[in-house]
Length: 194
Image 1: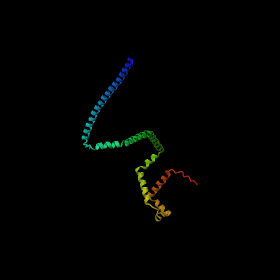
Image 2: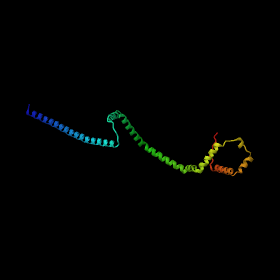
Image 3: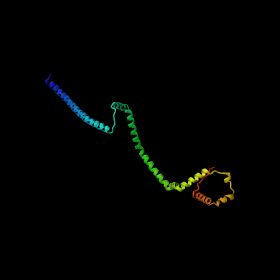
Image 4: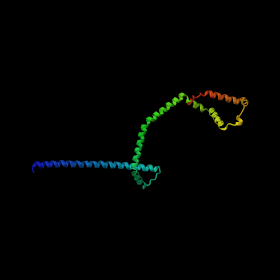
């Protein structure tokens, strides 16, 4: 072998040795970082465990140490269920995002329709119907309609008998009110189709 070949092999070996040393140094740094991480996590876990024990003690919660592994096993067995539940929650969130503008528009349409009804006076009618004297009159009317039935003897009167009843102030007042009511109600247009 020539001196040149030997020198090339030595240079090649030096390069490879440098790579091996770099790899060993990197592994050493990784191990030190991992050890530092484990140390830090150990401190955090101990502190979290201490605080959890303190909170549970203050809340007077008694844990069954045998049940904790069973709980963890159940959680791990149902991990797919938790994924499905999270997917469902994400879908619900997306649905709410999609439907919010629609609900907003429905609300605006409802407010506009209510305003239209108010402009037409429909709510005035409702307000009038809720007056105590109107409610009392409607109650008396419905009670009378339910109690009074057509009776051949009582309702088969002559014209003279009817005129005698017109002398009663209550009958005259009721008839006058009924006539005013009929006049106040606008007649409906009824079309007869044949």
